[in-house]
Amino acid sequence: MTRVAAVDCGTNSIRLLVADVDTATGRLTDLDRRMTIVRLGQGVDRTGRLAPEALERTFTACREYAGVIKELGAETVRFVATSASRDAENRAEFVAGVLDILGTEPEVITGDQEAEFSFTGATRSLTGRTDLPRPYLVVDIGGGSTEFVVGEDHARAARSVDIGCVRLTERHAPSSPATEAQITAIRADIEAALDLAAESVPLTGARTLVGLAGSVTTVAGIALGLDAYDSEAIHHARISYEQVAEVTAMLLGATHDERAAIGVMHPGRVDVIQAGALVLRTIMERAGAREVVVSEHDILDGIAYKAAEGWI
Image (cartoon, rainbow, N blue to C red; front, side, top):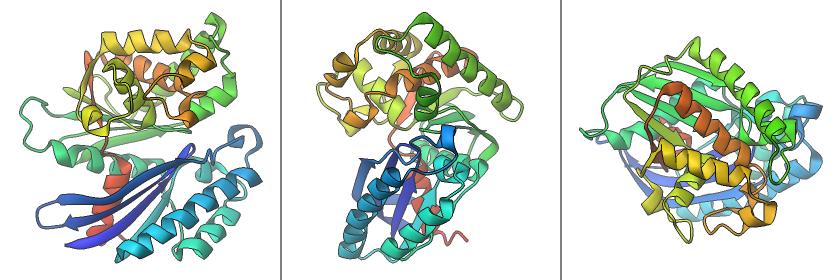
């Protein structure tokens, strides 16, 4: 058994998982799992740089996480940074800050690596599920990018494209409610990105669509009628296309205050969930998926598995 700490720093949130991993059985046991909205990608699509206030929010979360990691005694710590820090001109400042606080250098992984880790994290817990046939199409809708990966036991094709809930929101600034012109513009960006993804990943050949990350889990929580966020109820929930379409239409038509009042809505997702839900709905339409299987296990779990296996 190996005790590892995995940190996933994306465009919108930073997350920590401390877990015991049995590499012989593939069993992963959570000791601590937490998430903080830091919006590291604030303005990156426009300026190409990480904003000072975004860096400070991220470093504040890292200081909290360092305390948890020390208290639980993780043997190995891996910090993965994804879309926002890949794109930023001043990412050296980000790297130096994380190294100083956590004692480990953030690894700015490629989009393809991000997709591979997401696939591993999402599908290991599906092993043996005869009701969820393979191949899987795993879709990880992040803040700055969305990863697509298809495979059976292992990923066999992957692609990362630059559509995410934060990037699309900053690019098109949808109002509350969103106008038809704004929705059309966002959809055009999504469709163009799906064309790119389809060059590498067969979007229509999979038998089970697995959806990851906050936009997907939030839509699922709303579709399930939850009064508050409940990860156990959301994990492996099967949400139909009709439910996704209904929730997306509601979110696009809602005011900011109406979205904020939704019980499962994290305050940091209120202003970006419209774009995130639209990404999910459009993917399902392109893939011809009648449902999405929602997973709370994602890239964070994949990082933990790989760390325990001695990933170099």
